[in-house]
Length: 112
Length: 116
Image (cartoon, rainbow over all chains, first blue to last red; front, top):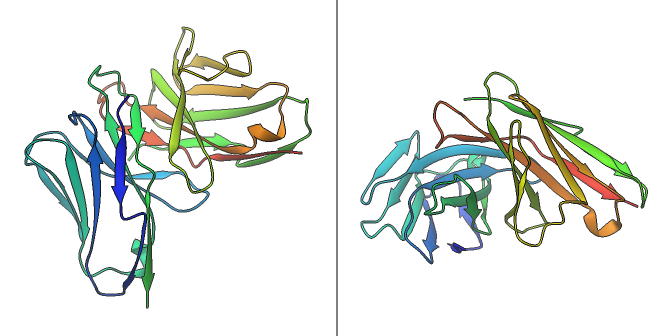
């Protein structure tokens, strides 16, 4: 099965500062998803990347998938309290059955 | 984006009883829904794939007789935890995949199950 490792496990950032979260896969990534979760709630879809070298942005969040398609990064610019939460990366398996494997998550705390 | 609801959001039940959790896609048809389980500060673990009109497919290690899944319509899947035990206490989340855009998967808000 595909294993995803996220780093860091948690981070605290001062409001207005940038932050980066990494997601590394044990296998080639065919589809990489980023979700945000608040503790005890469901997942909010952020972005999905498929192609090597792909980069997508939405508001202050940018996600990239490296050329070799085994690592993705999520970058938040000028963080705000609303960015606090748990960020999860998920990946499609090569069988194309749309079953997602997830990383353990990165807990982001934004301090005012 | 598409909306997926779950009911109930929280449930407390006694050991030995069964509890049903509903997952509904509110504004789209979902031929496939997934059920996940999440332990505190842990990632989501896929339990099973629920396909409308056919039997669910369970992941290795998940007891199909304990976690009964029914996908009765294109907008509803149910997970029944039978003969619940305290170790079944967890956060259960469902997701639904758009038939028209299979890479899009939307998650419900989750159900917190506590077995006493």
